[in-house]
Picture (cartoon, rainbow over the protein chains, first blue to last red):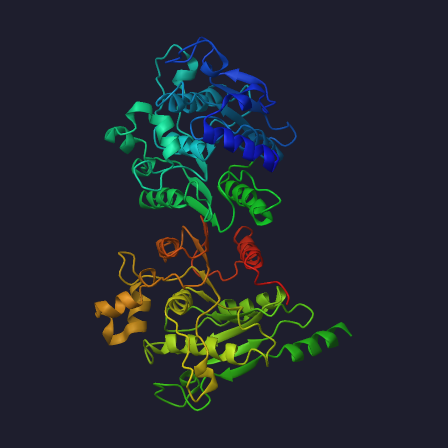
Length: 300
Length: 285
């Protein structure tokens, strides 16, 4: 996405005009609807009522079995499907990882728990259909940008083993991710440096519900069962300050969960995988692939 | 021929050691080598030199100095990116306690600034870089500095001891936090280790101010000196609105220096190079 387009999208997000970018999705992978018979809490039959995955399966000669469910950002009011979706899918394919770009439900039509249900379902779906998609069911990660990073923090702290006696085979699979990748994430909904827009979009009229705010300030929900995590942020991010990533990193440390954290100095919010204006940021995806390598996630 | 050329290059690169106080350091208790803090000069090759300079503070828990992989190797690496390196031999415990190491690093900065013209250095591009306890000394230099005394007799005492940038590699930062590093604290403070005011003064996450120079921090999650040292310093820099960069790799023990032997850690000096470039420290005048 060009910078002008990005500015345009950001402007749309800021003004609440979100429909334009959804009309022509930059996602080119085949679409799998998460609940073919209708999503729980769905309020209609339109496209935006049907959360889905766009499949970017790694080319057969490169595929190493690792998979990542990717959650684009957009303040829980939209989805930046190009530089936080399509481009990410292409990056993962280049290192042999299959990517599943998640179109999750969001405001104004949908609030919590819909985005969480969608990402949990996405992980279960990839795991249940691992064989079909040539994915190792023990190497399914989740990644998210900005509000999608919040959704990722939710996925790595809110999960279950699935229901053994469920009718739907997808419901039998665990929704615990095997690793988490948080990119300039919104984390602490309870702190002054939270992203107010995301918080309002996610919680709607429950924005002041203390229990909900606590439950979705996921730095408070980290346990030793939380999977290993990688975090990227920039000091210059004024939209979502790096304290969000720091809080999550420190919580991981306390729970003795392996973690890696990179906070580059320059770069605004929403930088995606980096661009020509900040050439030094192009190295962060290399840090990510090195981390995945060290964790044994890229072995064939 | 190649061997001869290499030998000549080695001769040319022979670093020169300069005593920080040729007439004797303040508080010195003897006349031995260890009583004479010094900087060893590794000039950048003329065709690469950017004018930037960096003092290197080896680690060693304030009881020792790791002057190879946290000293000379680092200075030579700096030369590769056009930065003049100065390996600091600062006084350590148990013979010397605070404030000797601090006085030494401050003096080193002043000396390089005072002699900048002689050494082809830009006096506005003088940094400090330290490892482990040397990282603590670096953070000390970045938070405790002064403008110099205009009316001092010694020209070195007239210039500022504020570094223009600071790099901390797996640093010790705090002596008051629950994760405080007690080993280096005892060597740094000696009999005064129980003095809470002194501990606070030397817990550098408590001493950051808006005039603290831009900082770069490198740590790993597995380090036995906990990564919280770097994280808390970063948070203090944020509060003071000081530009900063922080990398915490998951893997990596304590004391790998540049990490060039590790396939993953070896990338961290590249992050530092990028950061120095972005900050304009590598731009030739």
